[in-house]
Length: 406
Image (cartoon, rainbow, N blue to C red):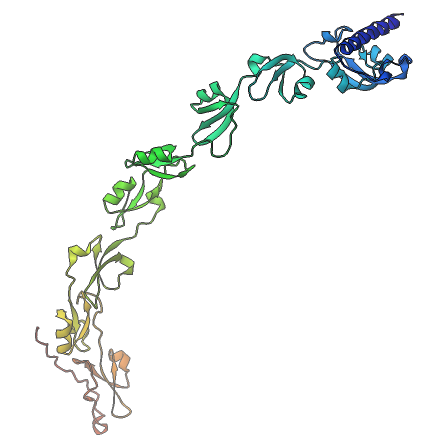
């Protein structure tokens, strides 16, 4: 008896709803009103209501299941849609089933409706927020520009991050927000700002998106020509004649090559270069050419094969050659080890033959060493004895006359 009463009550409610929709102009197919057995249909079943009245659906929402027969639906305390042949979609659209309540926000900031279930909000192509009210869900949003980046948020939220709100409903599109980048100032400080602002303030713009961390215009390793290193701003390093190695670079991470004035041995000209590249006379670390010019034009002059004993300093190339010596180069000195080689005549015992050797050991025990030569050509004229007198094994020592000072 109780089941029959529920069916009767639900039938009356369903009929009443159909009459209401008919009165407002909704047309139904004839099959909706056909009299059939209660159990003959399997259709939508709306469950979750607090009563048989579909308007009494709680905020948590009701649910709908398709193809449920009337008796099974009633047993689940549901409202069957069998007599009307409803599907769940039709049941939601007709209001027989009501989903969870929420706020329905019109896209573009055009208003808000509450409470509305998701189906009836989405079918209008609006935004639905479950459990939200209009006050919390439908706050207008728009593009917010901050430091070259764009985000879609409310005006209040944009202000909170110190952004530039572009207006309600404005979308983030390419080119909307001006570009930002690192701007370097003479004191090595860095600001993240627009290129135009940077250039007006006489800063150096480092490029769109370039960050100030690590500081692209800050202090770094500065190498001096002496090979020493200091941590300085780029501008100060340049002013002091150093080579700036880059912001953030530590002296321990860089190599500072030694440079100085280099005087050519051949031309006498000065060039400022790396110490390791100087093939002439290196005049000292960090020495500038203007400090040493004119470059020296004199050097060591070697006479004969007397070694260091035959070396004379401060000879020009011309005077050295004129006096029969060998010029060792501009800037050379007799204090340099082995600057003048030793050599002399060596008479081979097999024939009247003379060869130049640097000492008696090089001449050999079976030959005749004639001693260091005072000339550049120890075998001219041939000092070796003739074969008839080759039995003599004594060593001839020649007295070396010193050349006059130019």
